[in-house]
Length: 399
Image (cartoon, helix red, strand yellow):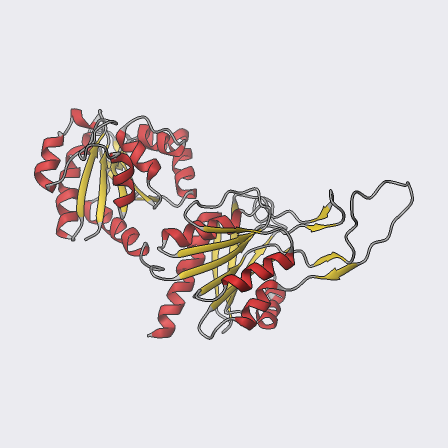
């Protein structure tokens, strides 16, 4: 039976959370409620304990099981964390990582997606700070259940009414269902740049930050996968839950990827692997002489193409094609030449997406010629788009 942590914050709409709790239980969820201090001015812990048969938390230091940190246990055991109603105050805290009560502490400790159903005065909902907080939360793949239009508690008209109970339940069911899309499957991802040494202090590399690879790993974990990431010296941190294998050069990445390949159902080549390396690596440090120097570069292995050739039948390999153009001809040629199941093309000439940016825009091209576009989104949203699109195609091909 899936478990939902239902957070209730200090809006007049808090009373509707009781109906939401009952409806979730009718849909087969175990519901654990958590109130902010402001919410407790409208509803009581006793109400939700009576409705759900579960403890209701409010104080940060409450421990239903003595010696157990409730905010960690509840966050880890939850298939979904939903805040309904979500006030402007709570949205701002969640957007900025502020955890100063039990509800925000649980939400910050939860490694899955958040579902947020705002409810407030229409002017507050339309304000720049609230819109900015919602944009930040969406970029982190939070699901926002938009409030309805109508008359709110203060008598004003506009968008700010808590969404209907069926709308919120559908969003929660969608998140809980998505969290099982890759359950029992193993995903192998290459990420970040490689570094090809010239001497002991200099190297050839590229602008990859590893943000897309990290987002792909995070998204796969959100969908229930077991994830291994083979990564070059990237700046972007990787999820703690992923098995991480650090490498430096293209040949080290190839060796590690081939060793890890058996038993994986999905392989994503998101690393920006250097196409060339120095033919000779100097010992020590090459000293400046003031004279021109010539170096010879030799090709590096094509890691994802090699994996495609070595993979067992049924393994789905997805490559990336970062090109300074939106044309798909090069991506299609790479798809065919490397023997991939799909390739994700992105135009790195567009400002604000691609290398070292927080946003991207992916065009997924499949081996049968089908194309799907994500549009401009955060890299985590792009990663979820990639996985959900690929999983849908896999399921369709099996039916």
